[in-house]
Image (cartoon, rainbow, N blue to C red; front, side):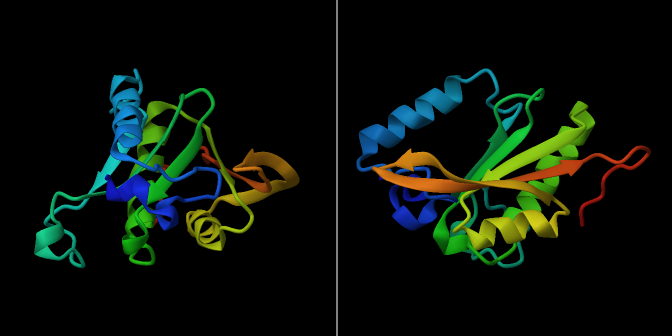
Length: 164
């Protein structure tokens, strides 16, 4: 089973139910690979040998994914294997994604986070996203209602939007 999507703790929000078997994971990956946005607006996060905190045996390992479904509605999404939380990988990866979206011509990038996911909200705040609103009970996953916190980041005129 794919360790990225199989572990309940690997999801970036409670909105994504963990996969229960390899077949489900394979179907999800086939869908993502076939998507016209694959490699354009959707990316797999893979450890490289240049990562100072990456053990050599983890080089090449897929640890997450991120992207947006369209450049017109740049709502980013991301997921990271729990084993790699708190090590700066998501901040590093999203920094690259934001630069890419600015170069792509996007003027405003948005994100939606489960209000219980403090870590995800902290990543966005570190990248200068600002909270733009909250709603209670807007999504239902496995018969449990969840709220949502909205975030946005505007591109500043004349700025390459350095987020480091």
